[in-house]
Image (cartoon, rainbow over all chains, first blue to last red; front, top):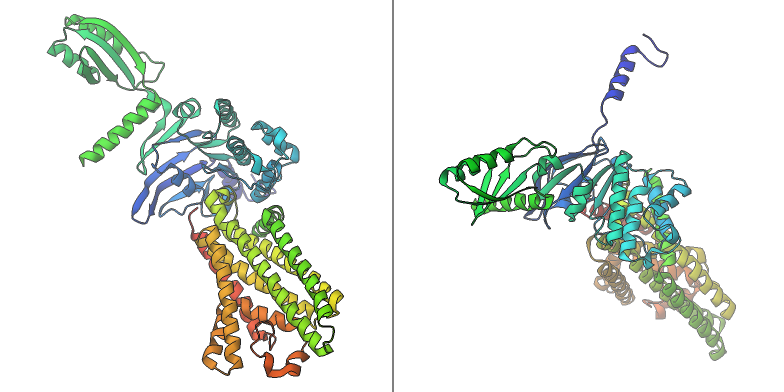
Length: 331
Length: 282
């Protein structure tokens, strides 16, 4: 087949390229940063796929903001590589379709809200009609404050403006660093809705937040950082698949205890036994619990109460961080 | 794309200068200085009615230079205290984060800021300086021989200082950068006066203090060139050695070599500021 536009081999190559999946929104590998002698980030690698919402979690000082700043070229990494939307982060064009709300958000106090958006549209090199810019302000609840100077805005309003700035230049990736730190509960709910809307539009989001409940509700995947390293990463199902079985038992003999320990990690406090069962998808009931209870009864154990719970992200996060620090203390 | 960033940031810097309190303070200071000088010049004529034409020209030129020094001080203070906060302050407050995360080169942002400040400083010198020359012309009938060259040199002086302020603000806090820039400006002026005294007394060692300081920080050299453009060229030959080394009269216009050096100095300091700003973590 010969076309007018090019040779068959060129066309084939074009088609091959077009059929390739788009490069991930964020790809970073082996990121490292030291400030003088203190290592802040070391060996951090993760990806954010197109249209995916990824939560970055971790305690204070875990290096989350430093990682975000390295992704955006605000901090120079000492090691590692970053690709944003398929382009190396050293190339400033890689940020053309990236929106960012910094943790430390402040906008030119001498400009009006509408002028701040105009500025960012111009810096991004996009052509966004005025009506779309207004709609962006309306989306964050600032429609009636468009012509007011930012200097007179409250913290919460400045953070809302920051969200509008991140959204205004038609981004394909949005990086939000603590986007609800200054917002009231209504504002937080608004941000949650906004994130879900972005996901349906296929915009990738990297979300750093202390509010675990927020992350749990909106994120597809979570990367947990601790002491500058990735402590755990995975989908919520992978991280939260574990179930916990709480039992109140009496007359537990050594055999019964062994039966309990065989089911999963066992902890005991008096008559209260807790068994952490292996991960399974949330909707699957593999019959482990009734089998265990029947087995225990068969061994002469009196079963007073059985309660099965799923582990919350908060519990899981704390468990991961405690195990990490426990392991480090032992070394 | 880079050029667009330069102009967007330059326009933003001009808008900042126009909307912040610094412009109002500058306007008030300038108005006070111009008002006082207008009153002073009318008094020269009234009090010393019996002066010869040469004497009154000398008095007018000297007082004009004195007032212009005040203006140049206002321009220096104004631009240095604008240059400091515009970089260091924005980094400190986090205002720079959202801007630098856009698809922009940091060098373009810095050059844009510099260009905005240059436009502001030059605009101020042109407006306030012309007003002052007009006041002198109306009150005592004195018109300097090379007003445009004088104003251009004054503007260049402001540009030198704001470039230095910009470099300092890439490294130290906003207030410190303004204070250091103005302090160096003052020190340069004092060194220039000392050098002038050295020349008057034929002491090469002391004269060299002025020459070296005018190379290291060209504000004083440019200021002396501006004074020379504002004063009547016959004055020094007429009144001779009595006024050698005078802080408000200048013996010679700046040489072309010196002006080239000033251009090079500005380029070097701006280049250094770009390098420091590019390497800096936000």
